[in-house]
Length: 204
Image 1: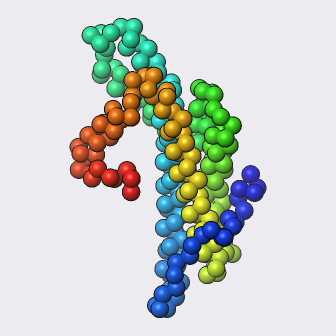
Image 2: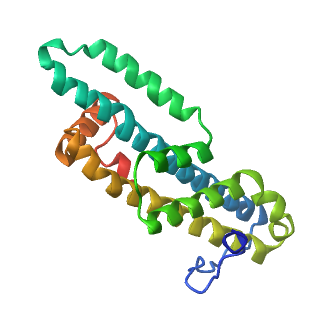
Image 3: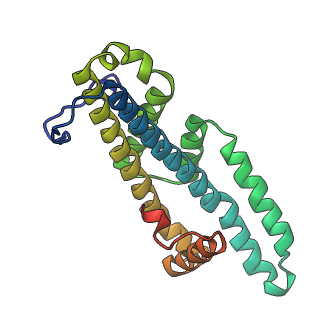
């Protein structure tokens, strides 16, 4: 874990091209804050992905079994929706560590995905509890702030990658309970339309 929390190598990071405008330290500080906000937002997306995975592996799997047993005519949609909201709220109340533990209890995961989740959790915890304290000296220097931005860009990439890997891992389980990619896309499009959002909102 210690290695994960070191400064990132900057070999592949492309810093902005220097402009003719004079350097503005306040704007540079704001840029660090903006990258931190994006990184933490992306970490929250990863955390929500874990909660959604648990929802599908646990609650929706049981609902699908019950539905097949009792049939459409006996299915109580209002009870289902209330149970759905209550179950998901319970997952969102859990700590990230407990979400990780729960999702791994519900299914067997490849070692690589487990490692990605562990790394993502370590990164998120570092951002939440230590980042600005540990980087206080670097934040006071121009090149230190550049290094912090590079570290935050790397964190975003890691959170995005593990969230995508988790989504792909859960797909076969979604299919078993009758949620195809097409159906998911249909309901996503309907949600965006109902809230007056453009179709590409989730890609931005």
